[in-house]
Image 1 (cartoon, rainbow, N blue to C red):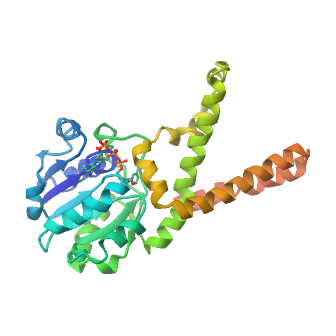
Image 2 (image 1 turned 90 degrees about the vertical axis):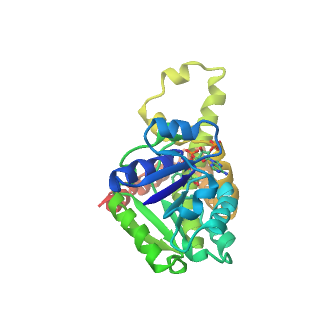
Amino acid sequence: MKIAVIGIGLIGGSLARDIRLIWDQAEIIGLDAHAGHVEQAIELGLVNREGKWEEIPQMDMVIVSVPVDKALTVVPQVLDLVNENTLVLDVGSTKQPLCEAVQHHPNRRNFLATHPIAGTEFSGPNAALQGLFEGKTNIICEVEKTAFGLQERAMELFRKLGMRIRYMDPQSHDKHIAYVSHLSHISSFMLGKTVIEKEQDERDIFDMAGSGFESTVRLAKSSPDMWTPIFGQNKVNVLATLEEYIRNLSRFRELLEADQYEALYQEMQHTNRIKEILNGIKK
Ligand code: NAP
């Protein structure tokens, strides 16, 4: 099995790490725009060597794991070069713009649009983790547009990674992911910003920061290189979630200003249902 990973960072590197264990005979080559990332990936044992674009036609699988704006040009470029048995996967956090970008490509049947719901706030090959995808969900869009034999190869990989599969159309993916992923990142970034701005004159704040603050602000460590294009590509859905979120924040402020403690209590008690919802999802 010959596999190319384009974008050998957190997600591409984690996939390479697990693939090495799943198919120990696989040759994995890495391509990356960031000077030094392929060398790091070789040192970490994620890939065998640096790959070249001219080698794409000999690949059995090409995994594209670059920021979502870059994927709009990288995936069609890869599809221009593939042979009829090359499976091309992307892992991007938005799906509609890329699915639209490749819809008329003559090699559309070589492409499978995926979004593994797994990750951390860190970037680059050093952040790659073994077992990152175990027990996680992989959202697959427009599966019917991928050649059946290539779907089977992808499913074999996802099964061996220990992933659950959900099929979804790209529009629904982008709408739903705006709530559970994109809004969470904005909320964390803006919480971090609020505290940093205040901390400039009140040094004591960080001495008092406990695990609640740390876990809520964790996503604010995420890379703006990755998140700016995600927010741009999913702008309409993200704006809708922000409107609802700001309405909820404003209501909270109004209730507090008006000393409406019973109503505040009800708001929080109602939201405690998130425990059961999340427990149900994990089962
Ligand atoms: P990452 O750690 O920053 O890795 C991406 C790598 O791709 C970087 O080395 C980057 O270089 C490189 N790159 C950028 N443009 C490129 C190009 N045109 N050609 C080749 N390489 C290029 O990012 P990541 O977290 O793995 O994210 C990769 C993809 O996975 C994104 O589409 C993201 O939406 C998706 N995803 C991320 C998560 C998560 O939690 N992080 C979860 C699920 C899906 P530079 O550093 O120079 O930009």
